[in-house]
Structures are given as C-alpha cells and as structure tokens.
Length: 160
Image 1: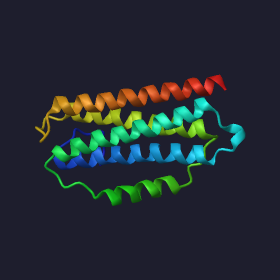
Image 2 (image 1 turned 135 degrees about the horizontal axis):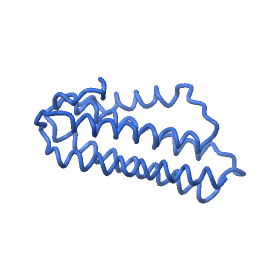
Image 3 (image 1 turned 120 degrees about the vertical axis):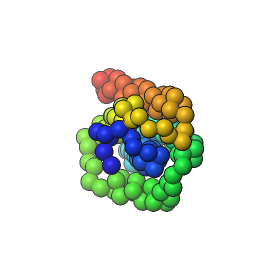
C-alpha cells in the first residue's frame, strides 16, 4: 500500500490509519522502554518529561485514529495483530546512538507518514465514509503534534 497514490476507498484509508496506530504504538512503547533502561546517572527530569509526554501524546493520537477508523465502512485489522506488528518492529535491530536519537527517528517517521497520508487524501477524489474535513483536520493536528515532538527532541539534543 503506497502513499504515492491517492487513497482509493474506505478500506485502504482504514488500513493507512491503522499504520498510524502502529507508528503511535511504537513511539509510546519505545519511549517507555528507553526510560526504564536508562542508567540512573543518565536520567534527568527533562528527558523523563519528554518521554512521558511522547507516550501520552501517542496514546491520544491512537484514540483519535481509532475514532476515525470506527466511522469508516471497512473491516479493520484486529488490534492484537497491530500489537504483533509493533512487537516485530520494536524487537528488530533498531540500534541508534541513544535515547534521544531513537526518539527523534520515531517522531520524524510519524511526522513524515502523516504528511504523506494527508497529501494522499487531498489527491483523492473519492467520497469517504467519513467527513473529509474532519479527517484532514484530525490528521493535520496529529502531524503538528509530531512536528512539535521533532522540534522538542532536537532542542533537547542541542542542549546536551
């Protein structure tokens, strides 16, 4: 399923929104795991706050995406299958140069995904089972959150 083409129908849109669910789950899971794994000497309030906010934000994004999917006339993939995809992605060899680099990669990936999805929806001339303006507004708000996340992680990296 490619985002280089317009979204063709509710079924495809539901699958793409579910990819967003997976990305949000990855961000949330990795933020929590990273902080738990940090040695005490590397922990600080600002980093802890950043990772907690990322996890909370991702949970909120998942709820918003689930509401969109529920409005579509499509059979979504079962949530436990999404969790398996997340586990496979999380357990893969994704070694980076540290917690902040990994968080930055996760935030950038999500931002780029939403940016591409918004463009694919805009290029589409199909009528979805959900209001297009509501869909685009929700996706644009989530994308803006991801952009802020990228900026916050970058700022913290520059300060260290």
